[in-house]
Image (cartoon, rainbow, N blue to C red; front, side):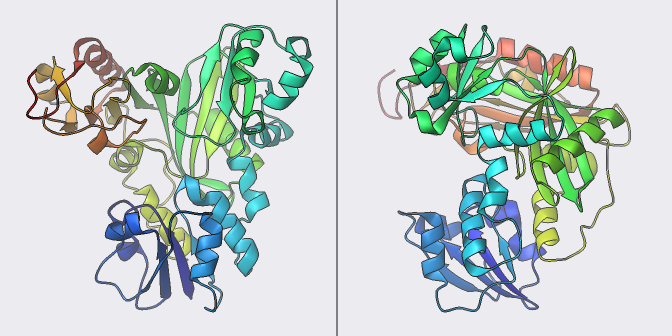
Length: 406
């Protein structure tokens, strides 16, 4: 079988070398120069370069021009899903084409698909339509969210007390690339796992502590704690995933638990970010990215269904992260962390020293933010209380560049 990998996710995360039999299959990797160092090594494969400066699909098609069409295309990054669809369409490769991918990338089409599947979503409008009609054309009055159609990590998302304020802010952005939606109150959970043949193969539910929006906009810490997945929620999630066309492969589904029942927020046809993959693996024994690769190349998943993390409620896991992109400094000083870092609840703790730079853009990567880690095993209540205490006590301070006077 010919396997084409649109490489962006490092082999240390995707484990291509471990999960694709490179001696059995003809494997070709197409990579931009800034990702070349993260390709697998010691495997029999063809490695092709693309410039990494233009349209991804066009560059991949140019790189593989003249080669036999692949039987399978592997693209694991959310930012490559649409490009992968276009490559499949151009080369006749089985799998989701561009039209199939749009409902998991365009948030208006996404909610429309969920609605068509009989699920409640926040009310919404394309920003251009709302601007043309004015506040009176919007079928809700209160708190309103402005967001990019295809963004991730809440980058570019903002919320306002009313529709008029959101539309005023919307005049400063690209209307064609944004939407507005009503704010629906309630705790937010994320479900992460793998679909197989239209059914849930693996699913773990986690409740956010903090919000992605406040992490992105205000620089507040964020985490989530695994909780049980009741059968009605699992059934609801299956309907939601089918509605947007995710029948096989990974998912990261966000749901508002409103008083009237679940409300579809958004979904990605990829594994969750931050340390979600590690927390899911600790709870279920399934490494989602490995399972995704094996599923694509037709290898056994290596695990039966798992609808609840761990063998019992005392064995939940959690992740947490403190951002640095709003700090105004590429270096930081951390205080208040010592009692937490030494706790037996900590499974992994990653912390920058004053000499190590942090990123000044939004990121969930442990290596680019002041403090991050994984907690557990413990009960959900124990993990939540511990995380809330951390979020109150630990402080991140700007620090001078190494060698500068403080």
